[in-house]
Image 1 (cartoon, one colour):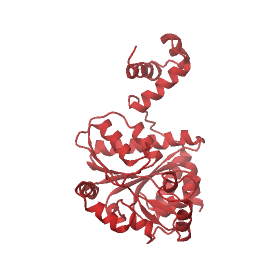
Image 2 (cartoon, rainbow, N blue to C red):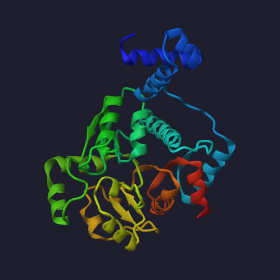
Image 3 (cartoon, rainbow, N blue to C red):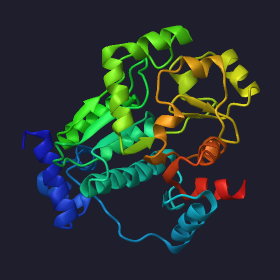
Image 4 (tube, rainbow, N blue to C red):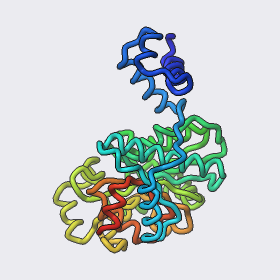
Length: 312
């Protein structure tokens, strides 16, 4: 079997439908166990395999209810605490986010979807199955970065448009302008105006939540240096919500960096079904700040993060 996609589907069928173990598949197909494992992962990433678990541990369901009650959410979906390594939690949270997006597409809860950037959203796009929703439209909520990675909102948009047969729109300009005047010029460009029109039309969004600790987007993509990030912390910034910098109370911090961000504003998110996809101990203050804005309809995270949010 020369076609890699056919090989991954073949192995996935043998494992998930026929019930063969990876060792049995390796023997039957003359493959190494490592190759079988790789092909199964490829089948997941291509969307050939869709895994839905109808039930979750009772303790996780209780945590979800507690989160809804504490923060005024419509829904909360959590990965159980049995997962501990970051990769597994990322995959679990991404799978829940992909299920949520698919459910909204199937219910036609918004033909236009706004998408943020981030590692977990990139994993969500990678986990999303191939389906046919040609009327679906996906638009970036932020400008782009000079350093190319799969976490870019543009790449998330491209993947989802490819998986659904829909259309993608991006803000084809840097996320951080040199000055507020430069931002105003970029926003006035025809291509950028189209993207912002689509953002206003969006009925739902899937967004990441940024923090200001080591490894943050602001530093990882060379948007700001350590001194500038330290300055933001001194001004009380704890979270980055699609380019809007927030304090611990969920209020926007009026600062030069925030004014230069080429991204949607908080008002653009009002009246939409906003799903935040974020987890991790270092992100707890940032997630709590975003929850305090009252803009979230749904939070997709993990049990450990939820416990931290409810304690603090």
